[in-house]
Length: 206
Image (cartoon, rainbow, N blue to C red; front, side, top):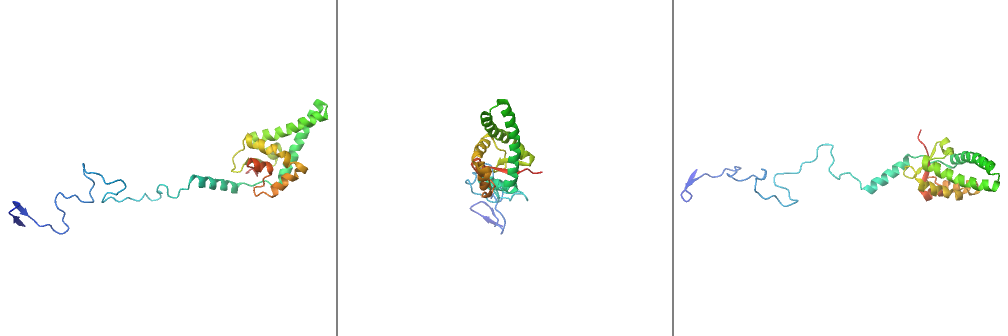
């Protein structure tokens, strides 16, 4: 230790690695009254700690909303078993029997084949629309375990039911040959009405 006459106090040389008095360590927390570092700049001595084990960082591994929706739709399609021409034609036959009984009753009431036939045609369209919009299936489809849903697997609404069943008039041409051709050429086994309404006929899970 030495004496400095200009300072009037003793001077002790600093040892290597020894911190001067009142000197703030860069690893100590910021003292009151000091200005914080600029935004985005990390304060000396404070390193960002990684998240706890098993916890993902925000945004890591998350897919955009559009990709998640597309993936969910593809997954739903992969889980559905689409109904082919054979089982759907059997459902149409069962519904035809039901509508035939209704037509016989209406013909007996009106005693006019022309009037009865026109009413039966209107009743048939209404039968398909109402049953599929409210129950998701007609009596023939229910008997065979079939159901009409949207392509993503959700229940259809009145809009989809009206579209697909109004186009049933086209699909039913030549004893449903037109509809069968559309089903055979569709990867989702959709007839013309299904393609326009974005619907499919699937087998219900047991």
